[in-house]
Image (cartoon, rainbow, N blue to C red; front, side, top):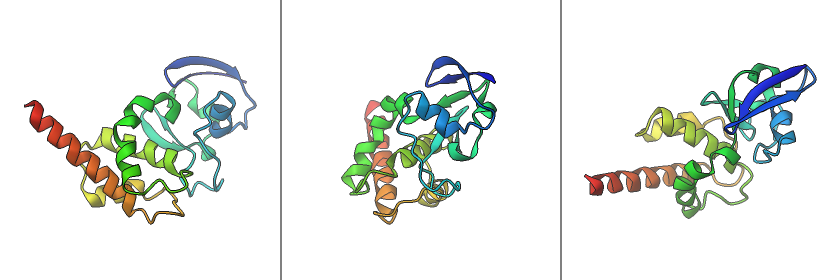
Length: 157
């Protein structure tokens, strides 16, 4: 079957099998930040944005993305650069395997809620499995980023 979608801002026409998963489709098109982890929709490693909403690409058929916008970390590098250093500074980037999923969900969170509480951050990131850090480093990194962003905005005013 033929599908048309926009992948990281680029229109794309492709032939796929009806049972092709979105994770396989985006990886076949060079988006290797999207990782295969649990294959049961429990770890968050395969998170992509589908029309700006985070979805687990291991549980979405590529055909469902037809006519929509799909974004991966490859297409959001500039937006991600703003806060990934804050996460790394907190030691939350130990092995790096879970980072793309955390980054994708953090981008979605901050687009939806530019000033979340700690509980809102925890709730939004709850679907991301991290075996190294215990999640507090990610929370501290996001909080540090929000604090720095707020201070920069106050200086501009």
